Length: 201
Image 1 (cartoon, rainbow, N blue to C red):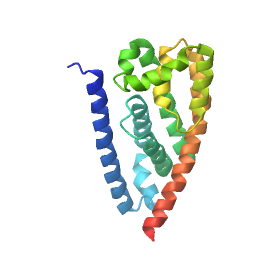
Image 2 (image 1 turned 60 degrees about the horizontal axis):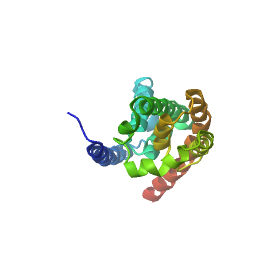
Image 3 (image 1 turned 180 degrees about the horizontal axis):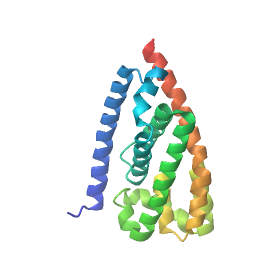
Image 4 (image 1 turned 90 degrees about the vertical axis):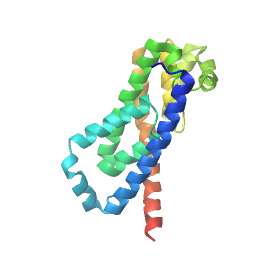
């Protein structure tokens, strides 16, 4: 069955809502188990998931980058909560970088029609003007990868449409992603701590 670009985006939006509801229900379940508030319970919960847990999490991160149905901030926070700040950062970094590289090659091999299954033509055209000069786009892309709140996934797909060399893209991702992942992780962790304390009052 062939889906139109518009139908694909609508399906992704529906899946995003569904995944958001599932995540909320899981968070409620884990909160009731005491996973978020008791370090011992968290360690006990993860004790039998030391190998499969990280592998599944990295896979989830890869999928959410390629098919954005899970809010990126939620998955970043999940890594820090369940695996700690260091291991969580590493798993987030590995999954996001692999997903970003996959996006580049998908866009390069399948072109604009593929991207329109994920983002609207209006959104894509909004950033296409930056591709008129390859050198300027490379700098623009690098700055956006480092800067929080930038539409990284869209720009990674867009980079695949340009003449950017793969190794240029590779090193921008590898060196730029740690900063945004760390910034999001710290902000989300403090936000989660504040929310837990607020609920616990």
